[in-house]
Image 1 (cartoon, rainbow, N blue to C red):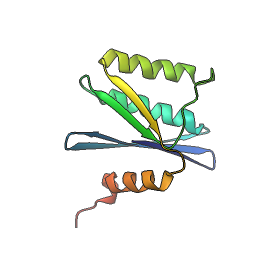
Image 2: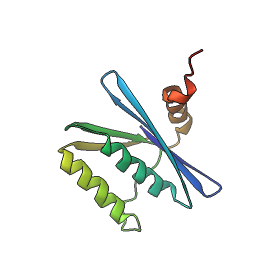
Image 3: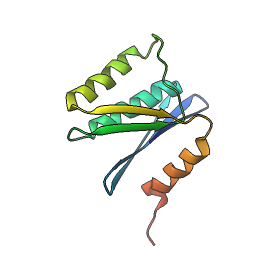
Image 4: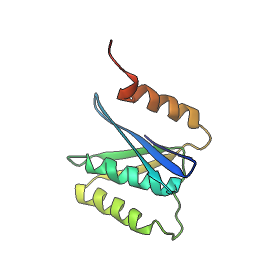
Length: 116
């Protein structure tokens, strides 16, 4: 699951990677970065954590652009990384349901689970 947000020219991605019973949380912020570029960078980061071929299911509240644009090199890096791992890749866009994604990400963010 991937989400990105932009506040005062800072974009941030948050990614929850799930495989079996294991989950991994990834997050990073960028200054002067579009939401799409941030999302693509997050996906590239996530793919670097994959160790063996698998099915990658990306759930996002943001649509990927299919038009030629300034992010072509990131699309190529992402596709190349996926192909190198021999993974399959599916994208499900769930527009308008951002609170559901935010709640899921918050629930799976290790920083929100401090043991007392």
